[in-house]
Amino acid sequence: MKTIAFVGLGAMGRPMARNLIRAGYAVQGYDVNPAGLEDLKAAGGVPAGSAKEAFAGAGAIVLMVVNAAQAEAILFSNGALEAAPAEAIVCLMATCPPKQVQAIAERIAITGRRFVDSPVSGGVVGATAGSLTIMAAAPKDLFESVQPMLEAMGSRTLRVGDKPGQGATVKTVNQLLCGVHIVVAAEALSLAEKIGVDTKSMLDILVGTSAGSWMLKDRGSRMIEADPEVTSAVDIFVKDLGIVLEAGRETKAALPMTALAYQLFNSTSGRGEGLADDSQVIRAYRALNGTT
Image (cartoon, rainbow, N blue to C red):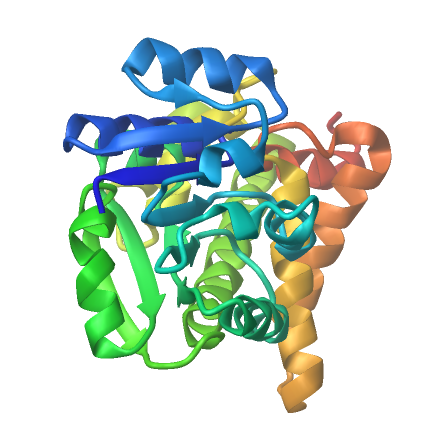
């Protein structure tokens, strides 16, 4: 499996593809954004004109797309998947609802090809460093066949189950905590702003105490920037927390903290700031507190 088709050369996909190239894989990539293709070419990969072209001759197909709908369109439109070798393995690494992951896996199985449910966590920082956590669900032999490839992109590659949807379920729980942690960090820093405490000093204090968290340390500094670089957009958490709430509805699990976090991200997006960095959910608090 030395040739990999990589679709989704966005903020995380680009460094993931670069790490595969560094590990010695031949990467054929596709993205609708020409900048992603240019980045791939500069790294030594082969830009493709379509997903179908990228799939040709690839032993593995990596999908780092926005959602399940995109994954389905890429795989099943214009005969794209049929262009891949009969033994090709599809690795879906995007955050998707478990039921939709299961449905995609079933459609792939009909073609005789195999599927690994393998969402990731770690953001752009982890993608760049090759330190992603990858939550893979697949039979043991199938997991072992793709493990070296996954380990080229992540420092923690964990097999969390045998069946499609189990990786997505683990990622769903992960995103619950990520989204709520960002919102709570924003609430704390917005309180400091409201009462006139210097937010940089406040952040320096908090990250060194028991109140600190990875999300506070990572997102906090961007919360106090006027227009920070986007590493993960507000709309990503509107989508991901929507998936968490969907899981709650299906299982009748109470998720009040998730619901509140979702509303704050959604209100930020509703004001036209969905493409801003997700740290800018703090703007929802500023609007509520009159500190805009």
